[in-house]
View 1 (cartoon, rainbow, N blue to C red):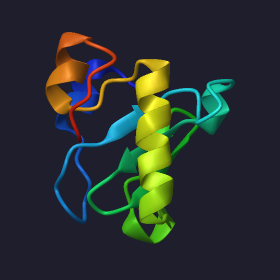
View 2 (view 1 turned 180 degrees about the vertical axis):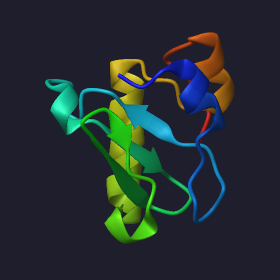
View 3 (view 1 turned 30 degrees about the vertical axis):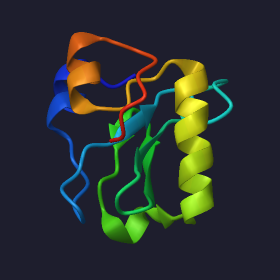
Length: 97
């Protein structure tokens, strides 16, 4: 699990926008499936062995509908969607990252 202090400062290297952290993957099952999502860039960054891989070459580009589906899933899971939410530990917001 990534510390909140790190999540507060991490941004997408492409868009410089905030990220949505899925600490146990989209299915919310295993920390080995963790990733960071940048809705603005439509990039999904892997987290390998607890280390975010913030390289655009290592990110997976996803479609706009897939981004919307992931944001909806983040809301279902109560994940913070904005940097301020992550800093405050607030979950279940409707703001966009």
